[in-house]
Image (cartoon, rainbow, N blue to C red; front, side):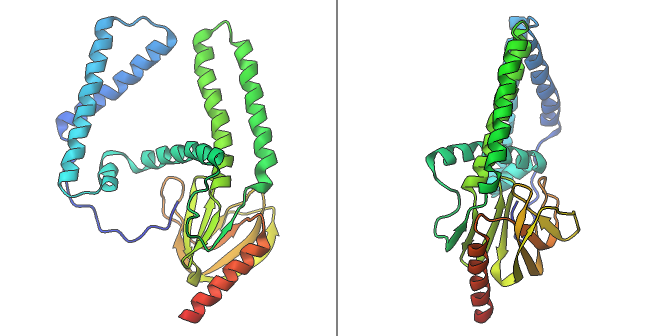
Length: 282
């Protein structure tokens, strides 16, 4: 979730013709139905499998053709992707990718977005015990279901995939919090939470920064609460609102941001100095 810049409207360009739309409407449900049959053990004739593979290849070829047309019309990769994939789906897939990537970064001890930073503020320490406990519960559930569903191999296989992904997701949420700290760089405070919040706040817009610990947070218009372990320890009041879009991209203007840092004093001192320097420069 970032503060979007003002963007020029995308150039008008054809995306899919009626034939491609019909192909998509047939191919996607057909592939889902085939997957359900294969997972449930229903025998599928070889001719149907071959037809499904050809249909999938045809669909991928049509999508690749549209991609190339959009690129030749001058659209960037991101703009072309926005034409081909619904924004909400793209945001969801990007979030899942960041979760899984964070596991790799956590193992490699390579935090994200800290290159050239003036100050880095970790914020994941106070949720670690809760996240590890939740991971243990998920692992225990996976083992228990493996024994209980041993007589139903198809159901066992499906739930095993779901359970393993759940374990990775919970660990990935904590890994994202560890590897994506708050960052102060170049007069901009980058406020983050796990893999779903990434907000750029110019320090010149910060009217006040306060140290205050809160354990309850009411939802109010114009306020963004980013608790860690159910608490926030810092409050930012902005002179001008910034756009903090929701998870699926709905715009939302906020003037108050409550967040947490492992060392609130260092955060307070660093942001106050940066804010004062920015105001003196103006």
